[in-house]
Image 1: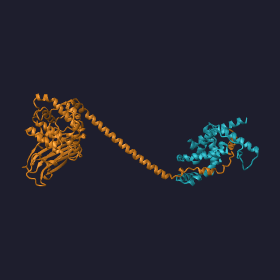
Image 2: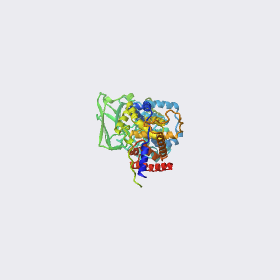
Image 3: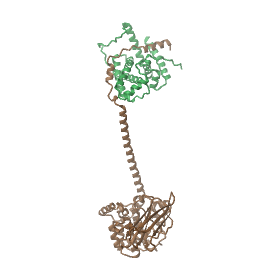
Amino acid sequence: MNPNRRANLQRKLTLTPVPKPPAGLADKIKGEIPKHLLLDTERERERLSQSVAFNMRVAASILILVSSVYLGLQLIVRKSEERAPSLTAARQTKKATPAVSRADKAKNVDEVTEAQRPGTKVAVAQTKPTSQRGFVDEKRDVARREAKEEAPVAALAPPPPAAAPAPTPRRSVATEPAAMAEGRNSDRAVAGLGSAKAASLQKLAPASNFGVESERGEYDRMVAALDRGERPENVSIAAVVQHFAAPAAVPGNAVGLETEVTASPFAQRKQFLRVSVDVAASISDASLDINFKDNELTHRALTGQSHGRAVSMKANSSITLLQEFEPRSHVESSPVANVRLSYRPADGDRRTIEKEVNTADFRAWPDATLRMKSAVLAALLGDALRNGGDTSRIAAEARDAGLKELAELAQRAQR
Amino acid sequence: MGKVASFPAPHAEHDPVIPPWSEERRLLAAIRGGDRTAAEELVERTYSAVFASLYRLCGDRDMAADLTQETYRKAWEALSGFDGRSQFFTWLYRIAYTTFLNAIRRPRRMTSLDAPDAPEMRDDAPSADQLLSDEENATRLRAAVLKLPEDLRFTVTAHFWGGLPVKEIARIESITGVAVRKRLHKAFGILESALDEEER
C-alpha cells in the first residue's frame, strides 16, 4: 500500500468530525445509575459469605445424614447376609415351629422394654419371640431343631463322651461362619454375646476356658431330651449356664471382668458368686484365679474349677463361672474372695484385672441383675436335672424374673 | 508475508477524558463501596468519548446519544462482571460497539427531515460545499468500514474511532499486539480497494 494513501486514509478515519454530545446527556446517564450498584459491596460480600457458610453447613449435614443412612444400610445388609444361612435352616423347620400369638408378642415386647433397663440386658435374647430374635437365638433354635432331628439316631447310638467333640458340618456352616473361615470347628462352646452386634461376630470360644468346659451340643441334647419327654442324662451345668448367661451387648472395653454376688433364691445362707469374662478383642495366655479368703469357707464350683490354666479367648466371646458358697458370717465389709484375670491382648503387654468380692457387695435375690438371675437359675436347673430335684420352683422364679425361655425349660423338666 | 506497518496512536489514546489506570481503579473501588459521586465522576470522564465513538460508528447525533445512554445502562448491569483485565473504557467501548451493532440490526427508525436539529450546526461554520463534501466522504468511509469483516471492523473502529491503544485492543480481543497491527494493515488494504472502486 502506498504510504501516502495510507496516511490519507488514516487521517480521514481519525479526523472524522464529531459534534458535541447533546446537552443533558451526562445528567440523563447519571440519573440512570442504579441504586443496587451503590450498595455497600463489602456488606453484600459478608452477607453472601454467611449465606455460603450456611449452605455449606446444610450440605455437610446432608452429607453426614446420607453417610449415616448408607452405613446403616451397609450394616443391615451385612447382617442380612450373615443371617441368611440360619434363616434358610429355620425356614426348613418352620412347620415344626408353633406360631407365636399376638398376645405373646405384645407381652414379649414389654419384656424386651423391661430388659433394656440397666442390669436387665441379658433377658433380651432369652425372652424375645422367634420373629424378634437375633442371630444368637436363631442359632440356638436351629441347633435345637437339628438336635431334635438327630435325636432318634442319638437315641440308638451310645451317648458320646463328655469331652469328645461332636461337630456336625451342617451346624458349623449354619452357625459358625467365622469359625469355618478360620478352619476351626471346635464344638465346645462358650456362651456368645447376646446382642445383635455380637451375633454378627465370632462366637466360638476355645475348647477350654478357665476350667469351664462345655460342649455346644450338650445343651441342645438336653433340650431335645426334654422335648421328647425324657429325662436328660449327664447334664452339663456349665453348658446351661453359658447358654443363659451371655451378656446382651459387647463390652465397652476390650476385656470386661464382671463379678456379682447374690443370695440363692431358695436358701438364704447360700450365696452365688458369678464371674463373667466378656471379651470384645481376642486375648491370649489368659488365666483366671478365684481365691476365697477363708480356706474353710465351703464353696462349690458349679461351672467348673478355675485352675489358672493359660487359655485364649476369641473376640466377642464370653464365659461365666458360677461358685456356690456359704459365708461364715455376714460382717459388713469383709473380703470374701479375690478374682484375678491376667491376659495378654493381641497388641500389647500382659495386663491384669483384679477384683475383690466383699460382703458389702452381697445382694438380695430380688436385687440381682437379670444376668445373675439367669446364671443362677440356669445352674440350679442344670443341677436339678443332673442330680434330681424339683424344677417347678425354678420355673416359677424364672417366670417372676421375666426369663421366659428358662421358665419354659424348667416347666418342661418338671413334666 | 510483508512487514506489519506501524500505526501511530490516535489522539484519543492520550485523551484526558479517559482516566489513567490508577485513577480508574480508585473510582471503581469507590463505586463498589457505594460511592455515587465516583460513579458520576466516571460518567463525566467517559461519556463524551463513548458518544464520539458511537457517533463515528452511526453518523447520527441522536442515535449516538441514545446508544450512549443504553451503553451505560448495560454497563451498570454488567459492572459486577468487570474483571479489570482491560481498562474500564476499553470494556465500555466493547459494550458501546455491541450496542451499536444491535441497533443497526434492528429496523431503522424514521427520521423526520423537519426535525429542528436535523442539520448539524458546527462552530467553525465551513462552506456548504465543504460540509457536503466532508459529509459524503465520511459516509462513504463509514460505509466501507462497516462492510469490513467483524474482527477487522472492531479493530479499526476501536483504534481510530474509539481511540483505544493497540495493546488495549489486544487485551480485550485476547490476541497479541502484532495480530492487532496485522488486522489494521489488512483492513486498510480492503478499505483502499473499496474507496477506489467507489471513486471509479
